[in-house]
Image (cartoon, rainbow, N blue to C red; front, side):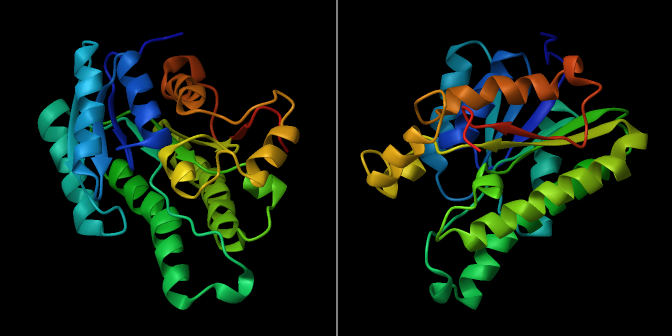
Amino acid sequence: MSSNNTRTAIVTGASKGLGAGIAKALAGSGAAVVVNYREDAAGAERVVADIAAKGGRAIAVRSDVTRGDDVRELFDRAREEYGPVDVLVNNAAVVTFAPLSHITEEEFQREMNTNLLGPILTTQALAAQDDIDAASIINISTAGTLTHPSYASLYVASKSAVNAFTIVAAKELGPRGIRVNAIMPGPSDTEGSRAMGFPGSAQEAQAIADTPLGRTGTPEDYGPLVAFLASDDARWITGDVILASGGMR
């Protein structure tokens, strides 16, 4: 696989879970990584320390991706430290599993702002750089856009919009050499899923039964795929939404 030795990458929501695994994989492939977080400074610093311990380059930067000023400051900080940003992973997301009747206006705004507006604002910031001639954006979606699980209508709607945004943005930004793809992870063992009681639950057992490879995912399953999409080996791939779910569909 081609290395990412000359890349500067921002990974949003990278203080834990899939984002942390992706940040470590990108650093392992040679990229300088900005570990973005909104609240968990300690978690972000642990990720940075893990990367540094293996000889990689990383810094932690706080930013709320739903706020344009914060996003611009995030990109400015990345540029000051490592140069222009040419890899962006839109991983930051929030989810509440609840019946349709329990969705509130506040929860709608919270999920849509983080899950959809965030990637739009960060993509705008990357594209606003006038000194890059190629870049790769990878949006983290969900296999739920294909499996349509109950009690996830708002989350699935927001990620379905991310899939559509990915395809349209790829068409718009392609002439500038900016590739835009998305991956759709399946159910995974992360800090977030543990906090929701997923491991050991009936839902986990059903997910494993529905997955041909016979287990749930881990952060380490997704990092190499993202590193590939960020590399020159994926130079002919854009506008794609890739299922990465162990076969669940």
